[in-house]
Amino acid sequence: FHAKTMDLPYCRYHEALNNFYLRRIALVEGLEYAIRTSALRTYLQPQLNIQTGQLVGAEVLLRWQDPDFGWVSPAEFIPLAEERGLICRITQYVIRNVLQQLQIWREEGLEMCGRVGINISIRDLEQPQFVEELLEQVATSGCHPKQLELEITETAFMRDPEVALATLTKLHEAGFSLAIDDFGIGHSVLNYLKQIQADVLKIDISFTRELLTSAADKAIIQTIIATANIFGMKTLAEGVESAEQAQELRRLGCDYAQGYWYGEPQPIADFEANWLRDGRAAGCETSNS
Ligand code: C2E
Ligand code: MG
Ligand code: MG
Ligand code: MG
Image 1 (cartoon, rainbow, N blue to C red):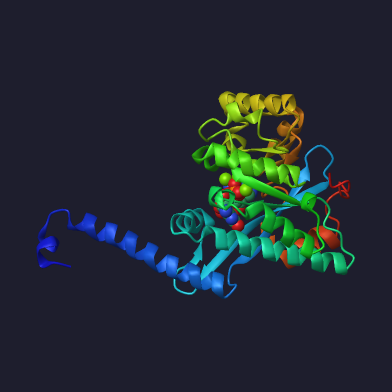
Image 2 (image 1 turned 60 degrees about the vertical axis):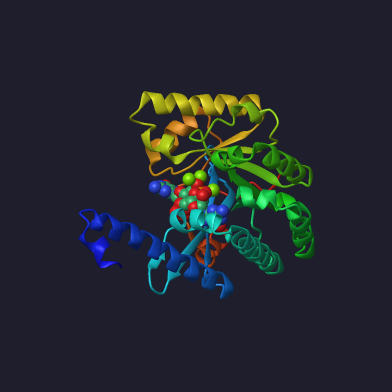
């Protein structure tokens, strides 16, 4: 630091800004190292049919414990990874892990009923070889595309709708399930809904949170469900934390739910014990389609 800078009245601001950038630089370094050493953990959060209580799938959510920073939220490191060109490596990491796990379960005779949801970035969709490579990886692992559900946020989609649409269409044709994540808070994707072959609209957590207290949020959820019905899509409510919310969503005709009320994101071994061996859910929706 220049002594001069330190004298300025806004030096505290400089310091904060500086800490912000120092943290980011250190985090990027730590993240690269974590990818290289397979230190990122893939957690699974169950998804249930809200009407029947059956397990319909699970979403992969990354967890990262950095030696210096402790637990770092994906809400912080994923945007950073996107900015710094690390996101495609992270997606590949997740895909490899998931396919490997599905292979292990199959060999053990354990069925992962339903799909595994993987969050993907617009950067992935921009890779010209993304679909072909994914198909090859899936085939090599003895899995089927319909076992995977690829989630793209509405916001990410709208960053590059034409490219996203082209790649999503290919993915859909290849048999992958598609979900639009955090639906309802992004720049409106409504105009594209008729073209995106999405299977699921994931109702953003902010609407679920206020469902019981805000008539407006309830109205938005009803609108999303009605819209999904028109387009032949399913709805999944994110962030269900209470029986009352679940009950209301059931009443509104929501199809699926995910949230702490049903199960937190958990290490794969726990998910396996709780959901695949224990059969905590009322059976599985086995059709996988
Ligand atoms: P998302 O895909 O919308 O994931 C749902 C988030 O809601 C997760 O946050 C999950 O832990 C949290 N959640 C689930 N149930 C509840 C609940 O009942 N109450 C509350 N308050 N929260 C709940 P998380 O794990 O912190 O992840 C944040 C975001 O980071 C994810 O949002 C996703 O966009 C991104 N992310 C996580 N893992 C990956 C990944 O492997 N790849 C990419 N590209 N993004 C990822
Ligand atoms: Mg998601
Ligand atoms: Mg979401
Ligand atoms: Mg979200």
